Image (cartoon, rainbow, N blue to C red; front, top):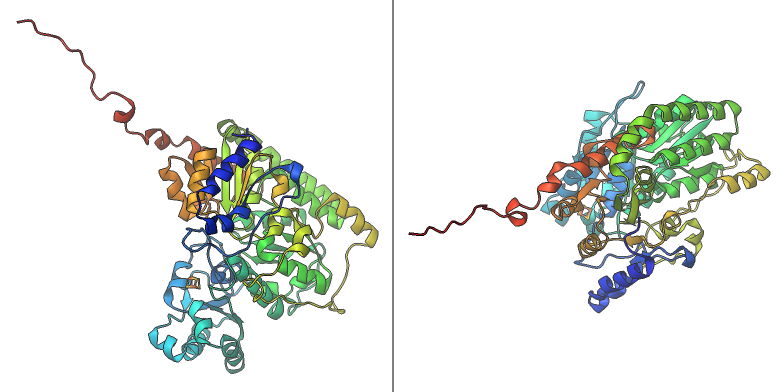
Length: 540
Ligand code: SF4
């Protein structure tokens, strides 16, 4: 059920934007739209500078590189080179779970490594301190690799972290990789993803020699929040896939080295990992498919597409058996929660992919998504990869390296014949992502880089029953009397992926919507008379 029709919504959107001063109006007007499939393709403005002082929800390049992509790799030591804040605030706050599996040597995720730069390091340079830090971690922890993640001051004072990495490798015999992911680069976390993809592709991927096995895959852009990756792995292993590497939740650098040996890459988060998926394709010929393991229907679709790619009767049969068994197990539970949730509406504002991924799950609970948006997605995440050639470079993304990759004749191989590729492309998304707008209903709203003024305006206008977003928004929404569900940290619950995850998600949403506290927000004396009694006149 849509609250208002699309022409009314467009009018309301216009009124909201009209309240901005002229410069802010100019800066924000292309970042919101009302979905109108008759006008498709609708163009979004995205991945541009945030307006100063507007109270954005965005983070920085360091967060995208160290916090998202590099940080979850458990067998490497990621040193934050900078003052203590960046490392401290990102210490264990993202729930990319990791455990030491059989045969694995290290799990360093519980630690926070920082050079803790002081005034003297800013004045005289921090390279000496960085060298000392690397020497110390190598002596104490014996890692096989060290990653250096730069923060804002590092680029400004000119510390040459790449030279320190070369020094460390020569002097200490440990592979050391420098990431120039200073927070001010780009406009959001997104630049950090790109920098991390480039570094891992250049220095790690393709250097391993894991034995070749049948049905080998990588899972890319899956960060094992609340154990999502483990649930996805469980399903894929039952069917019989050989998972070479996972990038990067519960992942290891050692497994990532052999990622080029996979027959197929499954891409969960398109925004953060599409660079590596494309580079693996260009250099080694490996195709990728866009999957989504959040939601029952999309999990089924993802499992079927993966099996279809390999076209093996055994895999296809095991896939169908697994789907049947899992559906049977969750059916009655999902129905119970659906009864509670159906007819309600959701607004979603999450990083670069989840606002898209969770829409199916809400639909399965009988709920409609009335607003969806991303902090740092690009136009292709909204409109589909077909728009990539039309995206213009700007001053902020021009300085992020675009790796040019050449075919490696030794490892390059195509799994599909030309005819089969053409046929499959019609049946599934091969090396393609359709974007979010295409799956949304007419009259719903899409917002890029939302800010607090817009969030509050949309809350009043759309009155969603649940707002799915992050920690910074959560209590603002709660204070407005609406249930907010964190879709970054899962409110410390999860997993939400796969069939079992769908039930946990449904339970969490049903619990949140029916929490008795929502009925107690208005004190009784505002809704009911405080005193009750009769006046009796005494006649003397
Ligand atoms: S913006 Fe700069 S100072 Fe802030 S967290 Fe990012 S790297 Fe650190």
